[in-house]
Amino acid sequence: MAKISFEKFTLIIILSIVFISIAGAIFYQKFETENIFRESLNEYISTNLGIKFQYAQWFTGTVIEQGNRIFPDHDQMSLPITDWSFMDYIAVFEKPEDEQIEDSIKDIIKQEGKKLENCQITKINHWAHPEYESLIISLANPVTSYSETELEEIKQADIQAKEDGGPFNGEYEKRIISNKRLINLCSEYATGNSRIPSMFLYNKDASKTKFIFLPATNDLYFHNEGTIEFLDNNPLFFMKFFEKFKFFMNL
Image (cartoon, rainbow, N blue to C red; front, side):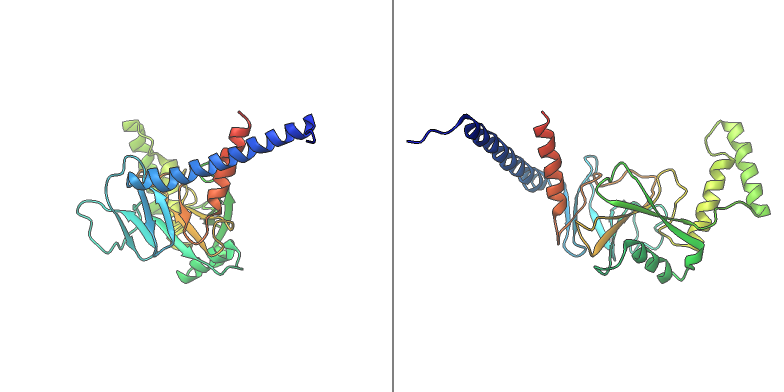
């Protein structure tokens, strides 16, 4: 019987370890996403909009869909929703496969009857969504002048902040004014000057024909960050798997 050289034997051992690690990571990921989450009923699946996500641990309510938006149910909520200003929701948009995401967002602005020359679309880096392109709508020309009424509002905000020691001073009021103009001139999906801005999220590897929008609400998100996946394609699963695999290999 031919003897196997030490080098070949070592290579076989290494390849076996790699194969077992890959198989184990795949099994762990499949078990984690398909069994644990579903058994604990903390995963929401929308076949209508083609996405799924995990609930935040604190969320115990129900979820409602209206049009292209998914949002948490609240007591005494009247449907349908007509004012989304302070709503926490996920919006799902569709786009042509060969269209750039920036052009798709411009289409949204045009559909609202707004002028593109007043707006700009900017890519940002957002720590919670590293696997996505994150984009915001902002004003092409930042606000530098104010009406007499707005100047009085800024003045009163400074006075009130000094009296009660609160954070809602004149600079905060300027942000509110800027965001109002941004929404009026560009889109209801625009709050680019917020500390946590409203964002469009797109990953062509996850879906070439869908992208999502998350608003800058004051509420806690009812979904876990980074768990949104599309039903028509699932490369994000493999991206997460390779992240786990690299982690195991570095142990």
